[in-house]
Length: 314
Image (cartoon, rainbow, N blue to C red; front, side, top):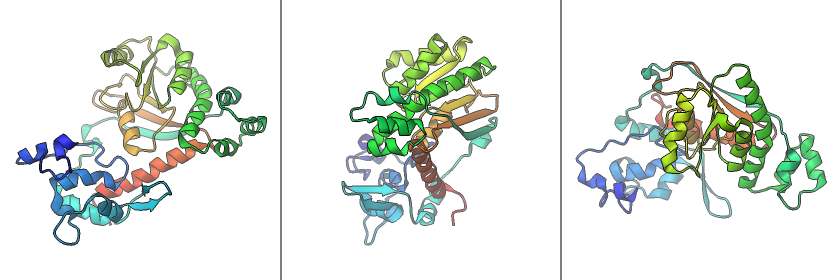
């Protein structure tokens, strides 16, 4: 970022200062919220973000103008958006948006599928201080008990993923046996991917953060070309961009991201040039768990981002 936009993101000592024209190309120009755009606008179009006076707005004034900003006790937190029609009008003359429909791709359907918790005792056994009361409550579907025990989001995410994994693996195995040709499954935690790999064994290819760079293409090619390889397992941070998995038309998020751009980029691995079948993307959800909060956050963020770039903002 500094090499491109300068150390202060003002374009003065970055690569953009050497160019007569700059075209910024991205499928996710604002992955989280409007504040993500400040770096690009400050360096390439400072006149669009002029503050009071004759200077472009610095980051926090820009963020406070177009985002909901609050102090959460540990620092400033950015959530949601505001004044989005104003931002839309500012950037619209400089924005060229291409819809994927022009690529003549087959339909894409996105839905949620509920899975049940399995292996609760095993999933909780590695954590200290987990009482029998907590385990019993979780086995009865009271996942709020787990949420009270694990107040930290990372632990809750991992626990939720591990609770879903055995049931999800069983469901996907049934689908393959019933005739589904190939599946792409994306998650986040290694422990969740491990459960799925244990079920599918040699019938799966895998690409996550531990996969050597030299082996990335081999994993993709095995899935694309070997009819015996039915499942592609990936971490959406490591395998969510830059690869083609069009051998499958079915995609499942074993775990999803709160960042809409990460989810969208990941599912586009199957919905891209070369795909000739209608595609289905499913978010595996454990009802009443932290899952619902993660997925709701992604929906809220996506709605905010859409307003920034819509053609007829109000």
